[in-house]
Image 1 (tube, rainbow, N blue to C red):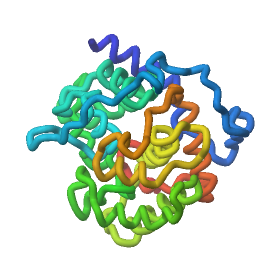
Image 2: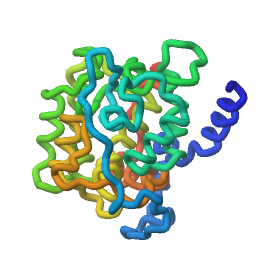
Image 3: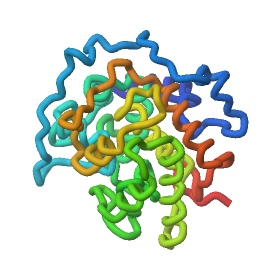
Image 4: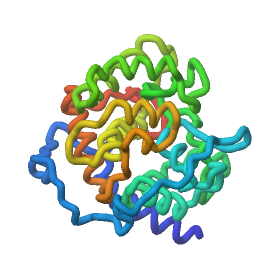
Length: 287
């Protein structure tokens, strides 16, 4: 197992440029990346097409089930694409769950997994529990769109006050890149103003932009740059796929480059050319 983990870890390092925290924003050219216009290509269509795919049953988590600060992974557990108890998630389980549940390619699962196992309290573990992700300063971070900063409260559960601030930026039925960029920067400003222990590592900052990008990928189809507000509100509040509102899982597999695209678009809309972080990837203050 150690050998396979090492091999996958090396693969992660080799593909690191596909993840937003390693982007050079000053020189980001979306046109040269192939994202000048929206594409409806179905070249990466999953065999489980939209017409045949139906979500697994949603079951609310029990008191002993493990849940963390990530609405997406909690949703996959609530629907049974990850273990319903939220525990013992291996790379294979994560790959299969993200693909089957949200049609996200394995490469993104690998990137996430090798950061997620860092949150496990067990040294050199090869699996993690969803609650582990709530350990502050690794992947869990200040300025969440739906969770409290750890200074004020447990950052794992949905926080109505924080979510109300985020939703205040979504003024139309369709959320745009510009609206979401303002919401993210608004949460940053609030946290820096009110949280005396505010911190944001290089890694967490990159993940926060990637989390925002998921709005347009998981709850939309990755082509329009907009997403229905009611889908997002339902998803975050219930950690449940909003099929009863008309949502269907996308039938084109989401690639890492797509997340990079939307992370770049969001940062450009926010006017970010230099990453606004307070600490490095290991939580040490930047000077």
